[in-house]
Image 1 (spheres, rainbow, N blue to C red):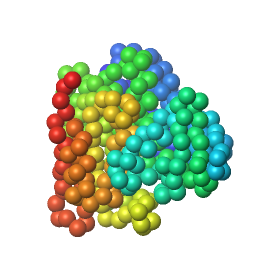
Image 2: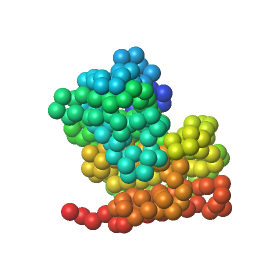
Image 3: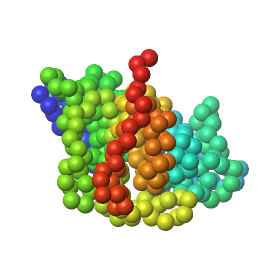
Image 4: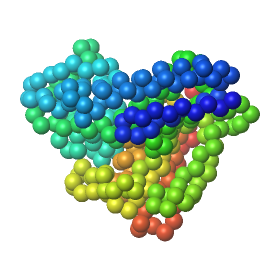
Length: 279
């Protein structure tokens, strides 16, 4: 039997869909997972006073603050994405993410300069989805699909008798379905301008308009075991990069697949990285 559980957090609705013979056990697993999401919001949100990120944002030059292992990992993923996208995915919007020193031994962040302002809104939901999936696996709930507001999604093992979870990709303005697929062990992220011009190009400070991006990655240990977080960051970057730059990223990313609609192109563009080879 498929069970559905939902929970409001991070200004969206997280949902767990899972197959398990014991509905009560499935509910307990989902509740434990949602508790993790709530904890992450308290650590990662810049809007929460005294959160890890609020304290980092308040650091002066030479200052330091201790943060949770999850915050440190999330910042490490953000640094990786900053480099991988030539600076177009920048959770500091150009204020100096690369000037922060991350110390895994003391779980602390050191600031080399004042004025760094972090906003993990472009990666936090994906990171939370990854941690929910991780906890469900620890509970033995492995046939599951997890999403945070549908923009960040991770499909785990397929329901019994099926090859995957049925998904559809829809245009943000019209909700017209443009791609239907079946997914297992895949992370997905969607970015667009339906909610307004909320994505800025850190290189120019200008908002991105007229584009929608869907991106998928293997649901394996990508970016430190956080495929949904990596997918979320890349989909944001792909809102900014031109098609040639996106193709370059795909060529260097085995298993990556992306679809994009641009107002300057009459057709959907579909790009794929090289096949992921089994170890």
